Amino acid sequence: MTARDIESALLVRCSAVARETAQLTQSIHAAQDQREANVFQLAAVLVQSRFPVESKCLAQASERYFVAHPNERLASSEVIRRGWVVSLPRLRDMLSRQLQWG
Image (cartoon, rainbow, N blue to C red; front, side, top):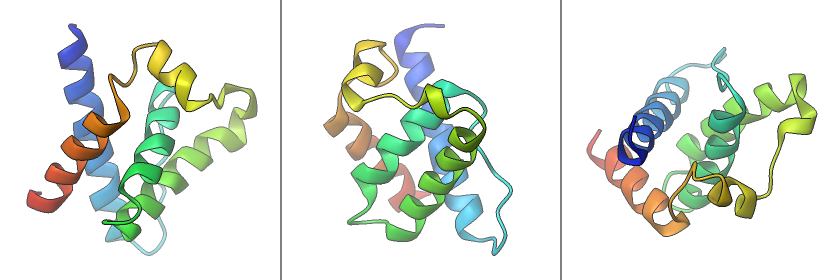
């Protein structure tokens, strides 16, 4: 997979988790791995002002993972260094578009 493919897959996953859990009262969604959990956490912060419900859902999905794997939480700079997110503004803009149009 190319970096763009990985980014696209993560955006689709973020959008799906944000939208699906926003519609459920008792969500069972959680990040599937360390990468998703850390990207969800970043995404939650980045879209919080425009999409507060979706932001909360992403944060909860991330937190569910970190409860079971507390040592896998990373600083945003480390998430970028690992290449999981190209840039924070890009993630915010692309996810916002998906949530707005989705």
